Image (cartoon, rainbow, N blue to C red; front, side, top):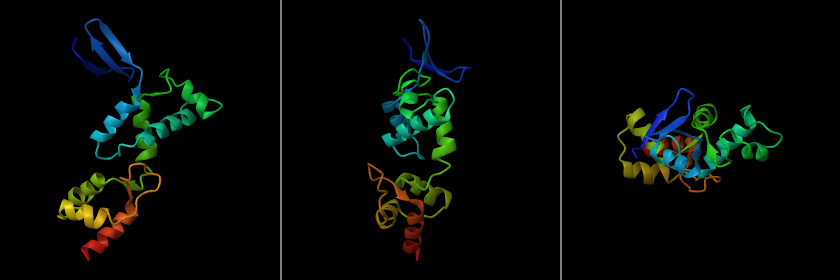
Length: 159
């Protein structure tokens, strides 16, 4: 059967098959991590998935409950391990990107080379600027650095 995915008028993702459409109830952890890996602005950190779920449980009316754990268990998608696309998009805009204070090397490289138009070689940017900054303690993979530290390190490198 042909795999065809569509966003429906209900803002949900539908798998259209010859046997009829089927609604995707949510995005599971592994899929969200694959989405994050393909994006330049989000690190592939599984903690982000759970932060989004917690935010949805505490913020959105359809998931609000007496405790965050109960809310996760009665999520609108019917499973505590599923995340609705509309919820992920809302959390990314309202919470994650709005409060971003650290970034990955790839994010930093895009900022420096494409937005600031600095022609610093990738190897030097990584070894002489990015790696000189302290890691974010809560980052399991060690791929994040504080934007303020990166700015200071970049200033030292260019002077």
